[in-house]
Amino acid sequence: MKVHRLEIKTERQLQDALDVMYMEAKSGKRNFYGLLELARNPITIVTAIHKIKGNRGSNTPGVDGKRINDILQKDFKEVLALVQEQLDSYKPNMVRRKYIDKPGKAEKRALGIPTVNSYCTPPNKVLELESWLHS
Image (cartoon, rainbow, N blue to C red; front, side):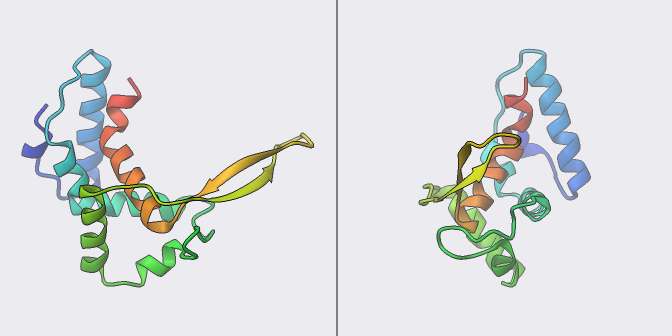
């Protein structure tokens, strides 16, 4: 599937494309072209941001002390350029380690809290690869 030839202008079109990719991956097709272009698409970035905002822990500051709302107060074009640049040269940042209770147990488990910037980029990559990874 040549993803870079798809015209994605709405979140619905993105979801439809991901559904097609999922079905193709499930049937054994493993060649997808243009995934980085799909990840850099403003609609994909907006969708990833919506998923991050909906996450229960989205207001937890990362190791850099920033929250998702700190990033969202910037101009849309600035956020878009920031995420696109990070997609092109992604290196994960340090994470803040926090220990949380395991439900129903006295034990605790480690939780890594990333920076907002590195939190934006992987979900975006997951969105583009989601259909391939789930098959």
